[in-house]
Image (cartoon, rainbow, N blue to C red; front, top):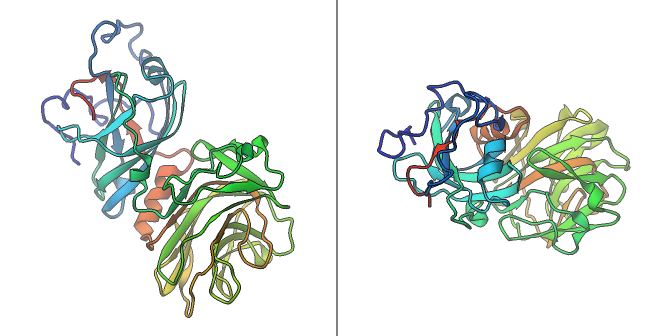
Length: 378
């Protein structure tokens, strides 16, 4: 998606042609701060609301990515002043002169604070990709969360109140909502990487869900971990699926196992890395399995693999977040956010782009100044 010259889109300022208000995908903008008080051109007539360009830094993408969910974090006074109170009028489109709608999910919006995920059909390597964010045109309800995650098996944002009852921990794919157990209260909802995350006490906190990831096919488990230590005998689990009644029948990611090291793989056929997560620091943990070999990444750096596995086949209906679904207890002590499962082995470039996009102080996206909308969006 190259920056368009077509009528209607060329009026949106090019993020590369003028100083950007900020170079972070978490951006704080004051629309009037650069030129002082201004007359609002939409105060009396602005049928298409406001639009602004989002520029994805192509230098942080090493191979073409298709169907990539981009995280957009924005803290913005102009958005607060002109968008609907709950963000119902937000939309995203391609920057192609046609305002082609893009599927998106709003994870959080309040008073100009936005956390959204946008499925971008194609992101080029080494070339900036641009999108359009629009709001304030009076049209509502254009979000389509499940379509954003159509290439994922499960997606838990972990932004909900765990004490809200059965199935309170929502799966954005609508496949497997989770239920918190033990003493998890509203206080377990904490500031995360993308909006809210969940804190686990290391004693008996866990979230259970229905697992339908069976067999020996490929998968990628990924998520953000803020390790606080380990209180149990065995260690701490981020995510596990399968019953573990026999070797190879459960898959898991352990953030703290033997000697505090990260361990991933299958019950009875796992891989112990040499990596130890630092305490009280967010780290992005990814485990890929292509049906033959595993690789483990921390902050997009490979710390293990390729490591071969044989005779593995996940079985059982049990899945757990923050604990183990098999016969040993690995209760998480720390915080988790954005746990995703795919039924494909994601490439190193994909994982690197996820980390570049989602990490704190990310520079993956630049946001232009707002201008009056010139074409309807969606």
